[in-house]
Amino acid sequence: MVVRIVEGEEIEEGVAGSGCSDNWLVRLFRSGGWMGPAGRLAAGPARVRAPAGEGRRNPKIEKNPYLGFIYTSFQERATFISHGNAARLAKQHGDLKLAQICGLIAADEKCHENAYSKIVQKLFEIDPDTTILAFADMMRKKISVPAHLMYDGRDYNLFDHFAAIAARLGVYSARDYADVMEHLVGYWQVEKLTGLSPEGRKAQEFVCGLPQRIKIIEEKAQDRAKQAPSLRLSWVYDREVRL
Image 1 (cartoon, one colour):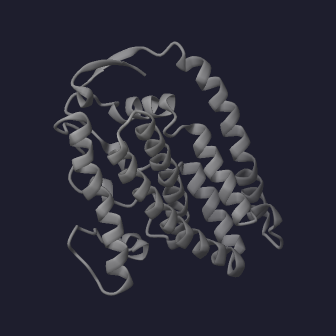
Image 2 (cartoon, rainbow, N blue to C red):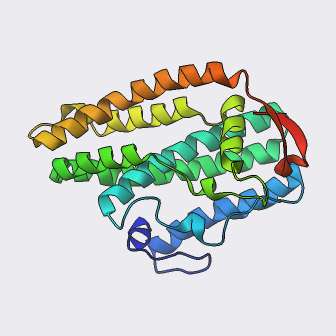
Image 3 (tube, rainbow, N blue to C red):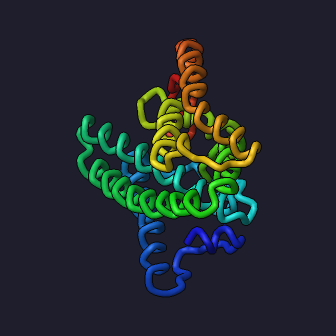
C-alpha cells in the first residue's frame, strides 16, 4: 500500500490490486466508512470538508520509500493512540457504540503500525546510515496528518483549533507525539547504531534528543493554553468551545 503512495499513485476507494493489497485497502477504507456515519450520529450533519484528493497526497515523503515507511510507522501509531483515547472517552460518556467503533479502528491501526515499523527495523539493519538520515529528515519536517487540510469554508485555522481541543480532552497531544517518537527510537534501537557517517551520527543525536525537547515545549504550551480563548465552531453546531 505505502509503495503505491510513495510512487505518487492516488488510491481511491474501490480501486484494488490483488491479494494482500486488497485486504490492506479494505482495512484502510473501512475506518473512514465507520467514522463518517458515526460522526454524523454523534454530532449531526458533517460540515467539515477537505479539498478533494488533497488528504491522500504524499505527506512530505518525496517519493522516497525510506521517508514513506518512517512516516507511516509514526502515523499509524499516532492514530492507534488517538482512536484508543477516543474510545475510552466515548465509553466514559455512555456512547458504547462509538467506543466500539473507535476501538476496532485502533486495533487496525496497531496492525498497520506493526507492519510498517518492522519494515523500518529491517532498513536499519541493512542500511543504517540512509535510514537514520531519513528519520531525522522526516522529524525535522514534522509529521502532519491529512486532516490538517480540513476546511469548513470560514475557519482557515480549523485543524489547529481541532487539535487544541483534542489535546485538552486527552485524545492526542504533543506529549503523545513525543511518546510515539520515543517508542520508535527504542523499538528501532537508534541509540545503539554504530558505524555511521559523521552526518549519520549528527542525525542520530538529533533524533534521540528530540522527544525530551518536545516534552519541555509541551509543558510550556500547557501554561499558555490555560488562557486560550473560546470560539464558535461550525462542526459542533456553532457552539462556543474553549480551545
